[in-house]
Length: 145
Image (cartoon, rainbow, N blue to C red):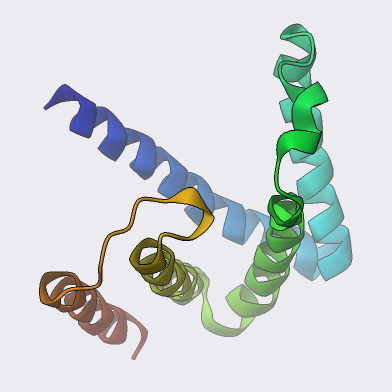
C-alpha cells in the first residue's frame, strides 16, 4: 500500500513540473522566440542534471552505447514538447495546452502498453481501460469547450 502512495506522489510531482514548465517556457518563447525557449529550457536541464552526475563521477554515462539508438531520440521529443507548448499556450491557454499534452500522452501510452513497445509490460486494451479513457475524454471536452 505504501508503494502506491509513493508512486502517486511522484507522478503528481511530475505532473506539477509539466504544468509549470509549460507556462514558463511559453513565457520565454513569447519574449525571445520558440527556438530560444527550447534552447534555454534544455541548457538549464543539462546544467542541473550535470551537477549530480558529476558528483556521482559520471554514473553509468560511459555505457551510453548500450542504449538502443532510437532511445537517444528522446531528447528530440523534448524539443517537440517545448515547441508545441510554446505555440499552444498563447493560442489556447495553459489548461487547454496541458490537457492536450495529457491526451497525447494517454493515447500513445495506451498503444505502447497494448503492444508492449520499448520493453514495457503488455497491458491489453480492454473495455475497462477504454471506459476510463472515455471518461477522461469527456472531462477534457468539458474543460476545453
